[in-house]
Amino acid sequence: MGKANRKYHREKNRKQVAQETKMQNNEKRAYEERLTALMNQEAYGEALDVLAEMIQHQAYDAEDMYRGAYCYFMTGDYRRAAQWLTNTLSFAPAHVEARLLLARICILEDRADDGMAIYDFLLEHYPQALQPEQREDMQDILEYYVEEDKERVAQRFPYVAAFMHIDGAEAPAPKASASVQVEAPEGADVHVSVASGTQQAEVHVPQPAAQAAEPTEASILQEAEAQLARVRAMANDVSVAERVRILNTFAGGYFVADEYDAAKTFLAEALELDAKNDTTLRNLAMLAKSQGDAEKALQFASAMHATDFVLLQALKG
Image (cartoon, rainbow, N blue to C red; front, side, top):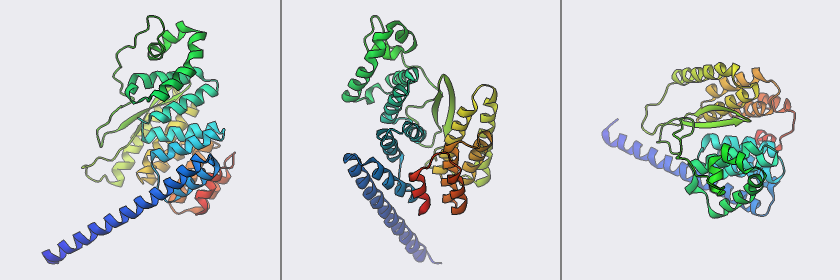
C-alpha cells in the first residue's frame, strides 16, 4: 500500500471514530435529558427504567450511577441506594454528593457513627468542594448529635467538632492517606476506603494510563490474581460480608474496563464466600449479559432474593 493510500485510510478511520464518538455522546446526552426530566418530576421508578436502558447500551458514567442511587434513596430503598453509591465512589472517589448521601443513609439507618465518620472525612479532604447549602444541611443533621454528647464528638470526629464550633475544637492538619487519593494523576491507581461498621479495608480500582502500553490479557489476569490473594489474606481480620463487598468492588473496576475475565475471577470468589448474596448475583447477571450469555444471566437473576426490575429490564434487551 502506497503512502497516499495509507494516509487516506488513516484519515478515513479517524473520521469514522470521530463520527461514532459523536453519535455515542448524542445518545448519552438524550438519555441523561430523559433521566433528569423524570427525576425533576419525581418519577423515580420511570427514571430507573431509563437508567436500565443506559446500562444496557453502556451509555453511563459515575454521575449517572449517583443519579440511580438518588432514585433508589427517594423510593426508600436504602440498601440499593447504598450499593449504587459504593459503585459510584469506586469510579469517582471525589464525588462529594455521593458521600453526603451515603452519610444520610447511615444516619437514617441508625448508624450515626458511620455517618459522622463520612462527614469527618469530607471536612478533612474536601472542605472547599462543599457548597453553602450542603454545609447548612450538615449543620442541621449534626446539631442533634453535638447537643447529645459534645465531648464524644470532639474526641472521635475532630473535623466535625471544628465545623460545629465545639468549644476549643480545632481541625487538625489533614493526614496523608494511602487509602484515599484526593487527586490522582491520570493513569494512577485510585484507592478507595470501603467501610463496614468499624472495619476499614483498602480497595483499588485500576485506571487506564493515557500513554501506557496496552496490557496483555495474561498480565491483567496476573494482576487480578495478586489482588485476589490480598483479599484472601484479610480472612482473619475482615468479615465475610466485607470481603464480598471488596471483591465486588474490584470486579466493578475490571467490568468498566471491559476486562470481563478478570471481573469474573473476583465475582466467582465472592460467590464461594456467600452463594446467596444479591449484589454478587446481580453483578454476575450483568457480566453474563455483557458476555452474550443471556440464559446464564437470567439464572443468576432468578437466584436473587429480591426481584430487581432495573436488572430485569437490562437483561431483556
